Length: 213
Image (cartoon, rainbow, N blue to C red; front, side, top):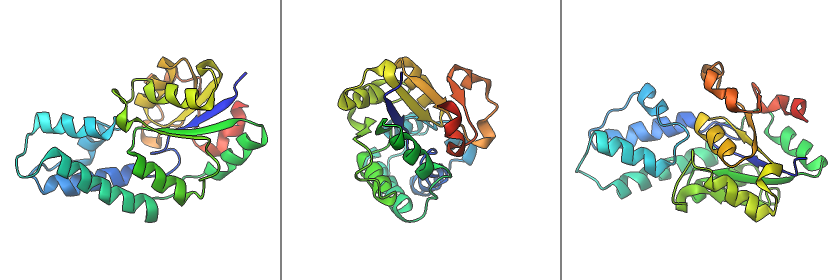
């Protein structure tokens, strides 16, 4: 029987994906790399430093360091999460439902901790999540299961007793690699991707989360 719920952040709690693309395109444009929306979508779900390494290897630039580009994009994203990105439907209702049933709650994301903190503050959820984990200092990001395993350890719950809520395929793979149950809530444009069959459930929105209980 499940005892804990582990939320992803980007694309699940807050609609930050468009801002990731906007921020990446804006800052990378300053170093001569002009990405399209489609190219940005290719790396959805990967840890951000891995995303930058990927693009640097394909199209190296020399006007700024990777660290400088990294920090400029995070600055843009922190502002967007704190002030602009939409909180997605069903977030608060799902939290209330899980808490009413006694589940422990964690947030585990590939994003930098400062972005996670901005999201938690935006949700007024400082006292809601018993564990808040970033993969930024893990050796491997998603699809490696490390971030989810760390969340389970901090909650003192066995991985087999955890349910992960994820929007990205990389996150779903990470959850299943951690031997956790997983609810996939893909974006509308990717909902019919057959690869999401590995998830235990697939929903359109957090609004429908009661159907899994």
